[in-house]
Length: 138
Image (cartoon, rainbow, N blue to C red; front, side, top):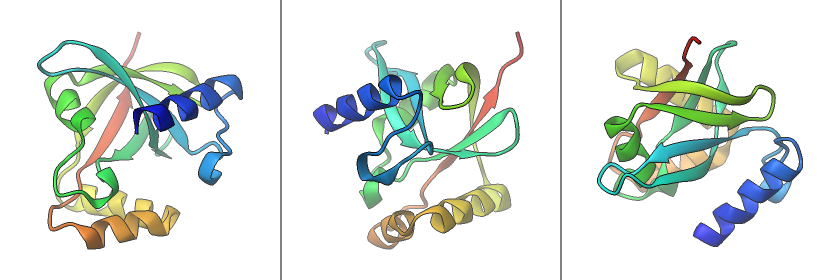
C-alpha cells in the first residue's frame, strides 16, 4: 500500500493536485499526520469533500476493514496538522471527529460521491468515522 500511496502523492504534487490514477481527479487531499506513539510524520492521500471555504471532510473507511486507519488514531492524538489541497496549497487545519447527525450527513455525501464508500460500509460492522478538517487562522 505504501508504494501505491507514494505514487499517488507524487502524481498529486507533480500535477497541481490532479490525480488521474483510479479517476481521482481533484478530489484528494494529502493529509500530514504525526504518529501517536512514534512521533513520525507521515502523509496519506485521502478522498476529500470540500465543505465551504475553510472545511474539508475525510472518511476513515480503510476500504471497509474492521479497524480504523492509523491516520485516524494519529489525528485524535495530534489534531492540529496540515493538508495539501488541489486549490489552496498547504493549509493548516484542526481535525474534528464528527458525531451524530452531522457525521451521518457528511457520510451520505461520501456515498453519493463514490459507490466505493457504500461498499466499504457494507463490508464492516463499525461506524465509519468522518473527520472535518477545519482551517486554522493565522
